[in-house]
Length: 219
Length: 120
Image (cartoon, rainbow over all chains, first blue to last red; front, side, top):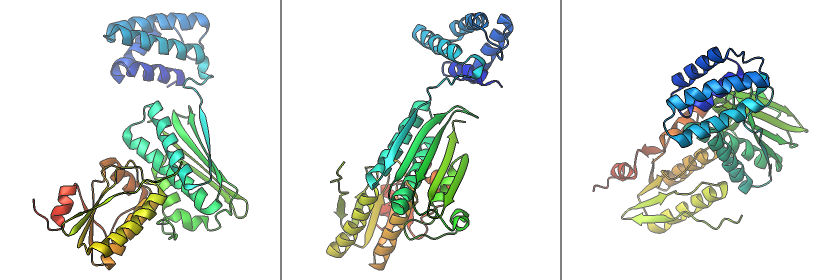
């Protein structure tokens, strides 16, 4: 499915069941004779007109109708051809120096998840992963940086980058195997983080530092 | 952000009860370890319950620390029961491959006290 189509369905689905949302969009596309891959201003207008009809039909409260239409208008205005991101690309950078920053980072991650409408289960996974990554920075590198940002592709999700200029990991294979036993934790931090996340990339060079990039997608 | 919070340890007959209702930081966990050890020595308690129903997440460090507390308590002749781990947190722990083996667990504080032989 096209990115923009998915976004429209996502917005609609906040106000109606996903199946209804899907069919509202399908019908609107058909009635407006619009191809979502090539949206000019006219096409956008026509599509929105049809979707509005669907919204008025399926969304009961007038306030909700307005909210839904307003959000859709915004999406369509910024999302022609799916080139512009729809949810704001926000990134928070936290410099991690001490143990208090670990808590700060994971709370920030949780807040970002909440904003995106993550389930409690996903929120806990993301904040746990941040906790592991931030702790590694404090324990092994001393200082570093955690960047939490919202990504749109390949799906809406949260990306966490943990970067440091610490000693690096010289036995990466062992650490990632889940059978490594560190003094501080269970040797399961990175291994566990990989299991919790959808994407996991690590680059580490002894003497230079470590960068871990993980992602958890909304669905 | 100075942390002056300390997790209280309550004595109930022969048992010590620790109810964690705040987000656990590393410092807090280390402090708790010391406090519990001291409390066991001071009170001669036979059982220890750590209720985690109030925490929002648990990572490998916290798991390890709790396991250590259980082990220390065991060496001092005290049985530890951990209670109240929320389903989502339990799921996250297992997904990570972490476990609390060596420590007894209970669904609730009541269940934990029952395990320690205290009847209502």
